[in-house]
Length: 481
Ligand code: UD1
Ligand code: CA
Image (cartoon, rainbow, N blue to C red; front, side, top):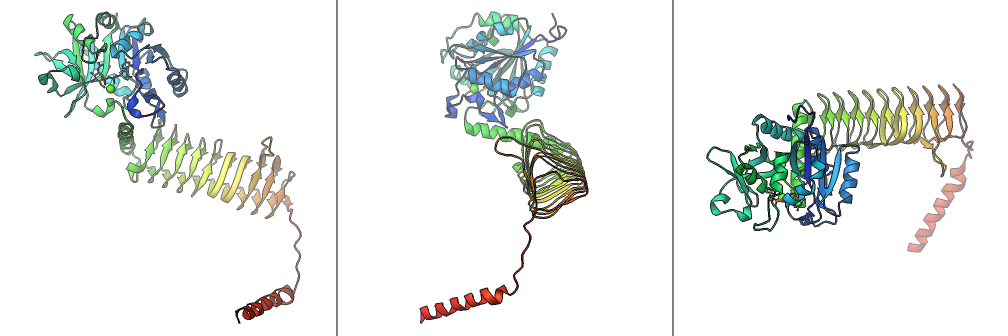
């Protein structure tokens, strides 16, 4: 039966039952974050994207945190869990997933600690496997120093005969520089048959998954190795140093793709791009910028040094000056923010709106061309178009129990140092005098002013200040003398 015609006879098994003691961590290895996301989520998602109908993750008896992390990272995806009671080797781990692979004809096997693995690499493996009509295909690569890896032993015809682990290899076999990446695709029937026959008679006393290769080949089936040009894609992580190194390799790849698609990166090595970020043409991204989550940026945008953006949408022609921090916000076309602006969740800046230094906004919508240029806090606020919000304007949106809304209609002018005690509404074209505390709604076109009346006392300097200064000088002279 053709797996493709069946509409997805492919299941993936992801091995994640090892502890990973070399991380020196209280957390299991595959739960360490890589580019902002739990390590094991990367290969799991790559397998789903490459066409696996579902993914069976093999965890140890203490695997609940792995389940929790995957449910959070990939909610609602087709992921099942199998428990391997004891870490008896990779072959035993795949055995534990037997039930989870039922009903599928092809099994793809991967490891949970290879976060750089992408769907394209897996598609390449599947394509090679299917076009060669192979029963089993293993992903391989070559290394100048293959120490520690299983070696690919090929026959005279180039077909793979077996994989020998480093510790079990002869001197000649150790000289082979083509190694096993630990990623395979195999017909399910043959896999189960081979797994039922392998033992643990080897240097580590483990059930080696790699023995499936020899058994399948000996039974006369076609076994291939698909050699990968980009070995870093399948690098496994064992230590924190390797994690940092691989993360940097993933970043180099992301930055290169962005530049190839027409984005200018200044000091690219300093720019961090996590998640599935999209950036339009002729956008310029400055040093030290972090693009996190599902941030999307339009064309002809400028993002200057040090901006940190998470799940932010930025429209064409917008300009972020240095050190804007934004989360779950939307910056409209040609709008500008910064330097030092904080756009918190639910903030929407309309076209050509402006937010300047030390302005914080939360759950606030600014209309077209509205300006909040200096030192202000707007929370739970709807602002119309053409509004001027003066320096030091504060919405008092929280009464200690509930949050309340402030509504500022079109073309309102707010003078400096104003408090708006919510809930409150400023009608269209209202003017708020500087220093006012607005506590009640203001009708359209009105002036609102709530200042203590100014008093003036003439001659104060002559009568009070100068005599006191003179007395002080006289006392200091007599103290010194
Ligand atoms: C394995 C391969 C080796 C290959 C290398 C690539 C075998 C016998 N050897 O060796 O040929 O070059 O990967 O990195 O397969 N795991 C379990 N349960 C277990 C043992 C392992 O779930 O009982 C998981 C680990 O969590 C890990 C993966 O399987 O994700 C690989 O195990 P690991 O011990 O790293 O295998 P290697 O010795 O590196
Ligand atoms: Ca390994």
